[in-house]
Image 1 (cartoon, rainbow, N blue to C red):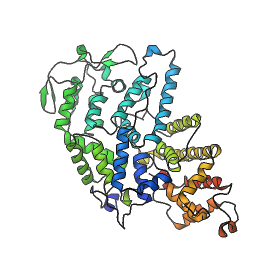
Image 2: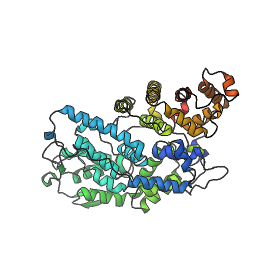
Image 3: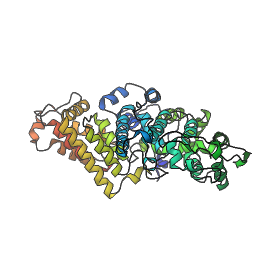
Image 4: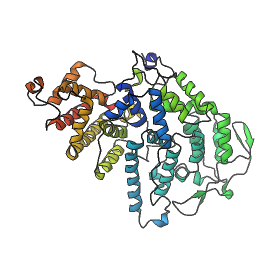
Length: 482
């Protein structure tokens, strides 16, 4: 039986019922998919709102979230750098700042990261912090904006012009790399409504972006490099240039674009098993709104389909989702800059180096994140995070447990169950596992202290108990899911 056999929900708005109540599990599912996770207090507040109004609120916040402030080096050219070490340091700091911002701006940065893995460039190819900044700023600006506008802007940004060789593409020798990826990866999808001749003719139409006066500076259009001849693209013949390519593409292949992009959004934010009827509904909304992204997200995340049990906890977390999700769910803060640097570095070692995906197709994601080697690395990194938080601010663990326990701060079994349910999307798989988690939580404290109510979360040792329980939970297979 496939996952699709279990799916019955449609894109109709989710209406809570006895069978599908609006509860903490579904609220946590929404926050994990839209913003990496949520602290207990955030989930408590979420349950006081209707699911639809909460989705509207999260999307509106993402649309109006302030951009990361431009650094002093945002427009530096190569001549402004006294040495390459400074440039390397700027790139690293920007990676760390981006990771931090994911905890604050939630959905906006989730979408920016999604588009980074769609319109891929690799910083190791162009090595200019200013080009990196402009590329990243474009991802943020258009994260929930208009896909057509983002596509048009992306092909002209220096990071992309260098990465896919547009800057080398001239009337004498057109380079087909960007033209091919524009269709195969960025809009239509592989072998979907284009021919090799369309690629060849499109490459000619995209020529001319060759004017580089200084490295890490602007790359402008140079008419001398442009092929002025007649081209035929998707059956349309004329002296086409850059803007014409995109106009023709979105006019002639709107169905294929909408379906491909909506399928990719669904696969990333909902499930690897894609029901085509859902994709068709999203694609219709995408086209009806002239390729605006936010209406598609509103429809998807408000739908009864999105809140089905069958799509909760079915995706494997990326390294960043793993680490940032723990911080978000636990409402933990990190004060040490070196630990942020370590987390970004470890994410790269586990296969997700920000601003440097594996290739032009991006990170494969989902189950590809985990193998026998990476799983051990994920556990070790999480343990480092858990114990660093304990060393720095152990009271954060007590506060987490109290926020989940309510007034029952002496009920160790309830507290351990609540913590497990908070961190694991669908909870533990059996009562035996809950009992084992409770034993880990109780540790070496004599049983009678729990039986007669002597123990409570006010005990000095309580933060360590919570940390040890979370350490136990991270090694559960279900903890790897989102």
